[in-house]
Image (cartoon, rainbow, N blue to C red; front, side):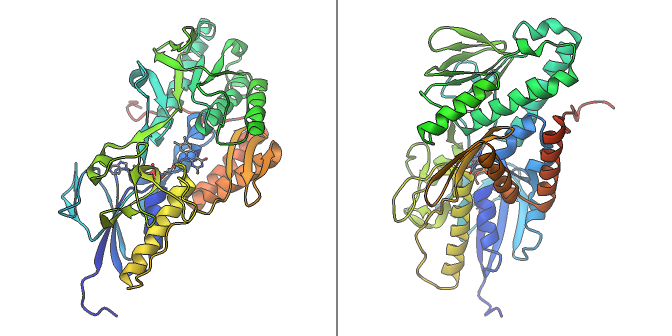
Length: 424
Ligand SMILES: Cc1cc2nc3c(=O)[nH]c(=O)nc-3n(C[C@H](O)[C@H](O)[C@H](O)COP(=O)(O)OP(=O)(O)OC[C@H]3O[C@@H](n4cnc5c(N)ncnc54)[C@H](O)[C@@H]3O)c2cc1C
């Protein structure tokens, strides 16, 4: 029963893994929660490449935020774009809404693609960080192939060739999925095109792929992609991107009608409003995940330089870290409000790291003994884990049926071009 004291107001900025994690853990807390995102959907970023390569429909990877918080009586959602954070006034301003005040602030606004100043990247590269990015890439590829179906010479002049920049999970997963699309699916869709003349090149400036894993996994990944007709250029950088080619650091050029960018993150500009110097492009937080001089302001997910306690290890920018950090903050605020004065430091539980290369090929490291898996076993595990993590039962069902269908038929059910500007 209420004692008449006004309830504290928790403002959560961002409905990503971090924001949703915090919101859910506040479900039973004696607070009023306002969750704000510029989109009305939550994006499951790990599967964006499957939208770009027609395996999954956009609705499977973007889930309505309102639906995620239906059952939460103490929470309101607003679709609005944050424009500023005033820590002294405890107020957040928006491009398209009136300012909102808070008692606690949880900031989980993610990060954005970093082109590292590469000439032409802003204009010509396709990053893969948001659902709009994935749809843009999907449409671009389909339009290229439809154009080539009318003029097959385009298959030979590099228009259909793709360069993928970055040999981390995003680049590897995208290159593997493109290989399957180009060499297993499209030959049936475009029988008039000689797709053996179309190239996919993965450029990585380090000396191995998936460098966060051990060397054996990097070697397996290189071998598997090469077998699947992806040309891998290690120890190479991309200096310039144009509409029809990339120029390499070593001086050569590669024809490419499409350049996919999967090579790095940079802070969102709003990180600058938090009054601290960024470290490695991320906002440093205490072991309780709040700003050093503002115990009421928590920063979670890709934005934050999160460390594990007690090891002190800096944690990577991963969905699992963002989700657990968000949940930890939700629990911490609940405890503070219930006058439990002893919030615990954040401890990250590693539930495994994995990446898929394509059909029957993936890599995984499974705790607690860091067992390494490759091939079918890792692929099955990757599928099971991503199904379990996908947000919403309907998205899970849709992913399962699309995966089953594309695995058994080599078909891509989401391979359609729909544009809202189309007249009919
Ligand atoms: C292609 C790709 C593949 C990945 N694969 C994996 C994987 O396999 N496993 C894994 O663990 N992690 C993976 N990650 C990383 C993981 O997705 C991120 O670490 C995670 O999404 C970060 O969560 P977050 O809550 O910090 O940010 P996000 O999930 O990015 O959420 C930020 C939210 O803030 C909103 N927002 C941003 N700016 C504003 C604004 N001004 N106003 C209002 N709202 C705003 C956005 O709309 C978004 O909803 C992958 C990432 C990418 C890009």
